[in-house]
Length: 95
Image 1 (cartoon, rainbow, N blue to C red):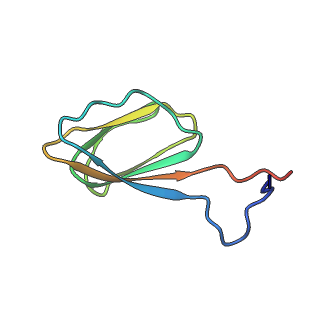
Image 2: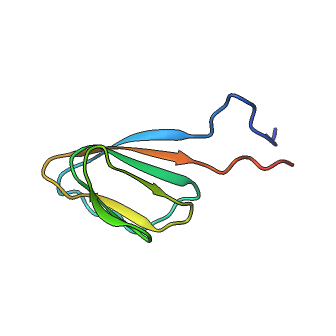
C-alpha cells in the first residue's frame, strides 16, 4: 500500500458538488463535516441552520461552515432549489 505524505504542487484538495433539493423534501438532520464547507445557492430558497448562522439564502448567497460545525439545510421555497456545496479538507500531514 502506498501512502501520500504531502500533496503534490498543482493538485487541489477542494471539491464542489451540485445538489438539487426537491420541493417539500425532508429536512436533513443536524450533522457536521471534517472539512470547511461552502454552500452557494444558485436557484430557489435554501434555509440554513448552523451553530453561528440561521437564515434563508437566495441565489448568490453563500455561507462558509467550519470543520465540525453542526448544520442542516433544506428547501424553503416553492419549486426545486439548486446549490453548489464545496468542501476543502485539511492539508495532508507530513509523515
